[in-house]
Length: 614
Image 1 (tube, rainbow, N blue to C red):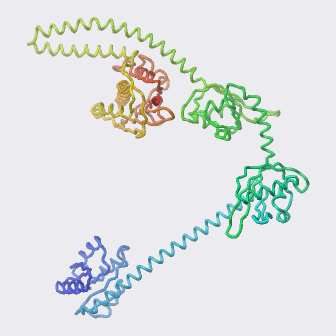
Image 2: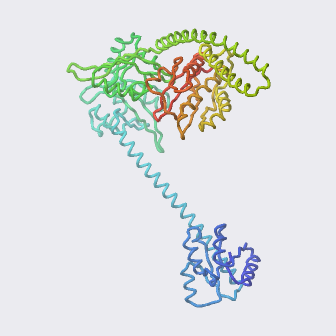
Image 3: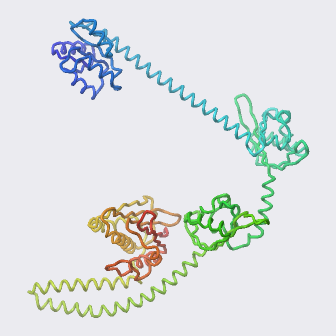
């Protein structure tokens, strides 16, 4: 870049530099130069000292103060040769000073020199940065190695298993941890004079040697049990596992010997308990006083769908759908010594069930609390059958009532409709009369719709079920309701799983289901001004397709939640018959699914529908 206010000098310098193979960007003053620099940085700047407005020295100071331009080499050009001016230019950050009249060869030589210097400085900076990064990386590796070594040492010395490190060629022990020294009752110096096969009982020594040879030949060997004998003759039954580690100059064998004394005692106690309760058809569990499971029977595992290793030592509260409720039960149990009630269990596959629970504290001979024993009975099917029976009885009664009402209403409606048609034929020119008749017909249409809804309460639909994607029905329903939602200022957020499996269902019935649920949410939020939202989510849980419809409305009174699916139950103050959710329940039942409602902790209602995958 050449910054020069004299047009002749600017043209002369530009032509001279272009002939030498440089690309030149001219600027007539300091402000133009700064604007041009923001677009793209040059490799070097030729800067006139006496510029109009911002002087060259001031421009140079500003360039050196900016991190983006501070490393650009600047060569001053001036017709003045005063020493003070040159000193000021160099103090401002310039790398050179050329006086006018300009000698092309001199300028080109100085430019070439400073560009080479700048390039070398740039390369040096890059190499320094790279070297610094390598040093830092090596330091991190070194720190990691030291940390790893410290962790290994801590693990080695504090392990509950006896650990021996032996030379792969001779079999002589090189190191032994605290547990090994404790079991053998010998100091490390004495152990390091032993062969690895000598840590077991004398009668098992040959077996130990054979095992050592097989391990070195990399043959797969499972855990084996031995007796380790201490210096005073005390025997400890252990389980041995070994690994071969190849170092740069040799092989070493690391052997782990686990003390089986506690495990054998625990297995004896476990066999006694299992024999006593394994035949129970109830789920039985033992847990410690903190709520961690220590024992479960087969009925418990079948009830929850877990393997025993996935259950033991886990917090018992985590196996219930409402974990906080289970924690409260545990606190009540610790206070009162016993608890009886129902909780909702959460199986491994995500499904839930209702269980009747009887829990009691177990105490020792001194009356000290030792553990908790719990018994469980799955009452899900019993509750479902009881609820279906109650619902069936209610629907039968409401069906008879609906059919009777429909019969009594439809007959006079037919007569009234015929009369209206006759009046329309005989008074074709009476517009005011026709307006009144239209209002009457609208009222009769609403009465017919109410009658139809009453009948639908007991026969949700006769449409043939077919393979379908529930996401498509949700999207189609949203398209139908778009204007209605916009009019009521309700935002809908869809979160539909893209990998939704097909189900065997009636699109028309499911459309009515989602239409009813969304309309219910819109009506529930009618009194709100802002923040009206409906969240619809679909996902797969086990063998079911799950759809949730949540809103930000006021929610449902807790005392009313258990009644919302009952026919003719409603909390609406206007125009509510109380059959919408009952029809929804009938549709879900017709598809062998389940529907549930609850209040969200942050407010609003959440309705969850699960439908079986085809």
